[in-house]
Image (cartoon, rainbow, N blue to C red; front, top):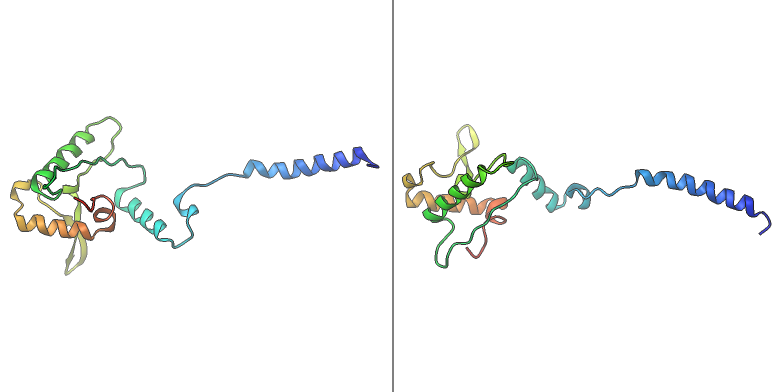
Amino acid sequence: MQRPKTTLLVLLVLGLVLGAGLTRLGFDPTTEKVFPQGHEAVETYQAFREAFGGDEAVFLAFEMPPGQDVFAREALELSRALSAAAGELEGVEQSFALADMPVLQLTPQGPRLVPGLPADLDQAQDKDLARFERAIERLPLVGKMLVSKDR
C-alpha cells in the first residue's frame, strides 16, 4: 500500500456514512408489511381488526364431549358463562361468546347486524339455533377460523 493512512481514512469515512443509515434500519413485522398488498391474509387480518376492535385478543376454546355440538343450547350457555367469567378478570376490556355473535340481516333499509340469539337461550327455538348455526358458518372469521370443523 502506498498510502495506508489515506486508505484507512477513506474506509473510516465510508463506514461512518454507511453506518449512519443503520440507525434507521428496522423490521416492521405487521401483517400489512409482511404480505403483498391485496393478499388474502391482509384482507382477513383487516376484517378481523374491524370485527373485534383490534388485534390484541385472547381466545378461550373449549371442547364438547363426543356427540355434542358447539351449537347445542347447553354449549352456547357454557360459552356465555365462560365469557362472563373472563370478562370479570382484571385487564379484560371486552368479552363476548359465540352465542353473542351478531348476524347479518337484510332489511328494506339495508343490511344490519342483529343479535343472532336472544339473551335468554331458553326463549330460542330449535329453528332459531339452526338458523344461527348456518349464519355463523357463513362468516369467514368465525365459521372457518373460530369453530372447529370437527365439532
